[in-house]
Length: 138
Image (tube, rainbow, N blue to C red; front, side, top):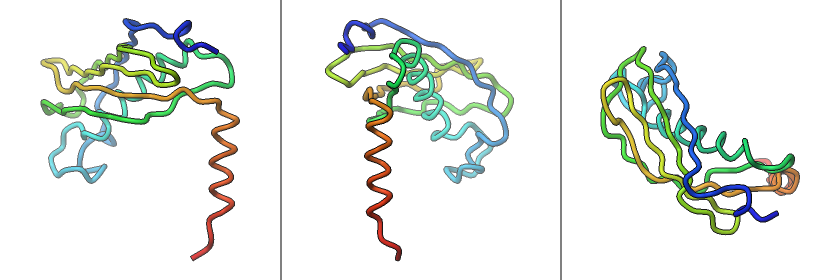
């Protein structure tokens, strides 16, 4: 499979999420103020990129996050809707680099880069299983 034939720079995906109680910083432990937690913002960015690739990858293939470099620029309150966008910047071998961004109803709240690796799911799970089988009880 040549990933460059399936995934092209400029491809985009946009999704929206409502900031619910469980996405607030105190629930994650990343802060005390009741605003969208940075880990959730990054997680939604990753999910948006993942779902973009999932639309084009053949059965048995998926992607995993390998790198995130994101700035959280502004706070978003409970109940606001956030729009997330992922755009393919480049494809090199099995790695896909994205620009990711997020806007609440007022402003840009986050932006950066995210890298994902395309995997063969069965091979990946076999390797994870091998790791699980080699762990010794403490």
